[in-house]
Amino acid sequence: MKLSGVEKRGAFQYSEWNLTYRVGWGHICSAAALIYQYTEDAEILVGDANGQQTVSVSSAEEIGELDEMAWLTIRGKSEIIGVPLMITFYNQLDLVRLHVLAEGEEFAETDYKKFNLSMCQFMDSAELAMYR
Image (cartoon, rainbow, N blue to C red; front, side):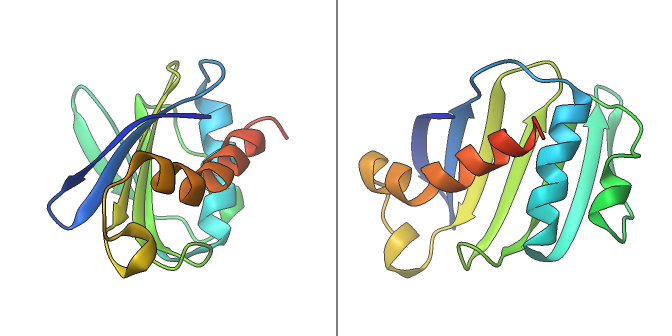
């Protein structure tokens, strides 16, 4: 996955990432299921042009059973990076949007190179999970 850009927006570092290939709903659900396992108080939102809704899931496996929508967002506190995040995957696109709370030494300042070093392996792992 390639970081397109990062900028500070309020209390968050907002970034856009490009996947190697456009992905479908099943791929998105696979990535979200992996992230869900390592996210405290995880919340799943799905939506399309008609609006968004929060969906109740109690396990990573249930994410794969969600009805197909235009996008899926997972948010909560990441056990891996140690701060709250929100990741949005878009159905049939190669775009992923990521918000990470801008706190601590690692995420307080906006710096493309430093942010890429901090998040690239995490985001690559999410992309690889799409194909397992």
